[in-house]
Image 1: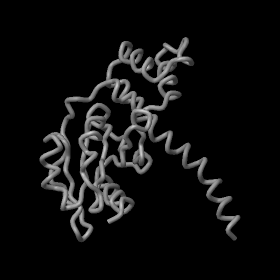
Image 2: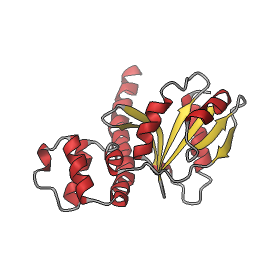
Image 3: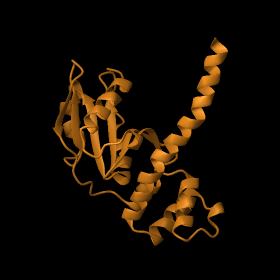
Image 4: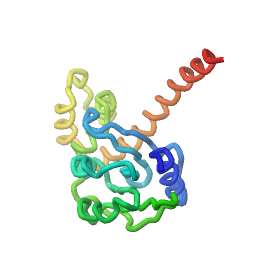
Amino acid sequence: MKDSEIRTLIKRQLSKRQAYADELFVEEVAINKGLVRADVVYCGKKLECFEIKSKSDTLKRLVQQGWQYQKSFERITLVCASKHVIPAQEIVPDFWGLWEIDDHGKLRVLRQATVNPYLNIVGVVDLMENDESRDFLRFIGHGIGVGKLCHEDMCSRIKELCKIQDVVAWAKKTLPNRQRVKRSINSPVKQALGELRL
């Protein structure tokens, strides 16, 4: 199965939740200035990451990716092809969720994600673009001089001033808004390209 098809299965599984909303389903989230990308993020009751490993993927980068996910998300789930299930169990911690996509394209929940003990403020700030971090500092009343702050300086300031639940709440609000803006920008471009092809 292609990644796009697996994302559809993830969305279908999440839609079984009582409070599910499509607009909280975010794809391709850059973390730490693009060092890592989360395949799917769901900004619901918890800030959740879903990492996809299809049949054609390898698990080579999973340790590096997982290290960043564990800093940035409240819940983490690996969604992988059947061939990856056994080796993945040797790599990912027990608090990660594990969902299997079998050779017939069916999704099976092998275990649900539980509390991530490694979540920290810097990791959550890594999810945000610099303008979003500056907006957060302004929102909490500490916006003086933020225009010149780099990412690392904003991480330090937010860590000094805030509780982690406040930063998580801001990230859950910010990521879906960012995706909505990108969609609204892309739609006229796609429409114009479509007209050029006619």
